[in-house]
Image (tube, rainbow, N blue to C red):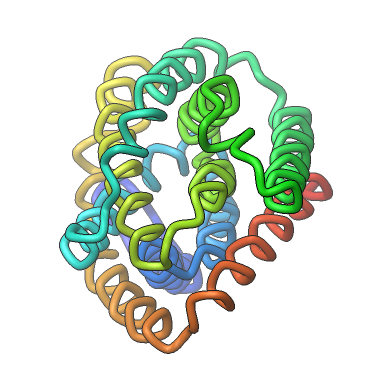
Length: 252
């Protein structure tokens, strides 16, 4: 057992925390699928509600590393279309998150992701602009992204659909996503501190202990993404988005 501030952790739980850091670092620098492993891992150690407050600073540290590396590739014109709606989603998630049944929430989000993937694939087949040029589509995904990131840190798959619909290059995809999540995650901090009270000084110190592992994951993610061809990367993100939706749907 280890006493870390007001947290008493077993050595196995400390190892899990280290893996969470590595997975978050990899996810933030382009390996989308590893992010959906980190959230349930942390929930196993601390429970759903407390883990959301512990996870947020870890995500922000990963966002900062991704922004540092991919800043020049960010596409701000696309961010401006979706960020205002995401702020609305964060507010809705802050208010409604306390009352939402976790299992039902995950199933609804899985359904939304499958529907959005279907719309995006239909759009590509028809070679139309029904998604990226359609403000209801952008507004819906923006609100869903803000809501899901506040309630369960599950917005990665929602935003992947939005960014995939824009046909961005892989570095543009990662850079744009990095800035989106850095901004949204910073907006979430006051709500976690003052409304949900899930972020404390003790939890922040515990998060800082994970920093070296986030950096290791970020380094690994950058190196692996460099070796993935553009077209294969797009298919990889789409496949991991569908896997994430299936994971949400069948998770107990």
